[in-house]
Length: 338
Image 1 (cartoon, rainbow, N blue to C red):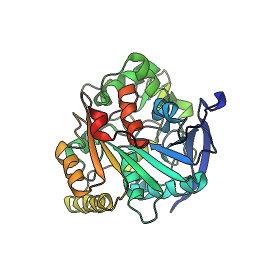
Image 2 (cartoon, one colour; image 1 turned 180 degrees about the vertical axis):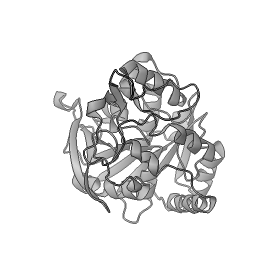
Image 3 (tube, rainbow, N blue to C red; image 1 turned 120 degrees about the vertical axis):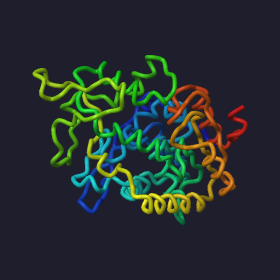
Image 4 (tube, helix red, strand yellow; image 1 turned 90 degrees about the vertical axis):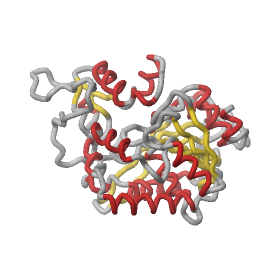
């Protein structure tokens, strides 16, 4: 693969937007772009449920000499608009939002790296006839999602409330994101720099009707947020629309079974090389499901990352090397894991 020089001006991301459509109207989706904007080789990196495109800063810097790296903020997160109707915070809408982005980028080749929710979006797109995706990384996600993990995530998504200080927010994240694995204090701050923002900067541009105070029950042992009733106004907030929790609720068993069947159908239809990354301690993607994925689809292979649950952050050099080797057609998963 041709390597493109990365001028100094490209060492930080550029912020841009595409306009998307939902049944509730138009909204803008933000994306962060790294590397040469004329590079026809595109890598799209898509984050998890409550995160943002800035999760991939280290990975993007490493790969921006090879790719035009594009990291969207899924609608309702980061710099993207909030939907006026939270019922549309669902995978079909997220998939639809990626279509104008793909059209705007016009890449000759498109590789996809998706963490958790971002992987489900990529899996759906890669299954479509005529898809532009030619290599796919599914970071700790698959067609079968463990119910206990979904319940764990559902306990805190949208319920954190406001924090009196940035440090209080980091303490909160250190509990709910403990499964990300060990990080240095510097890496932890870097990872969460764009997730914790001043409260007055966290309001979505099209949000309607959400209460100003969202303090609620959170998992045992989680540092408590500051109630809005205290005299000192809260200063920091997680940078996503708390209403994403509306669509993130337990499904009736028949509905959950139908959803899983649809995801398996999508996964089975993927024809491009696919790397399944599993955190060794993941409670969302079981070892059995990862193994079944490789049995059902001969294009898929698995690598496990020791000492990590849901989900690997790909901030460390060894994790980044696994993605780089696979995406660039190098050693492949089995060798990268050795």
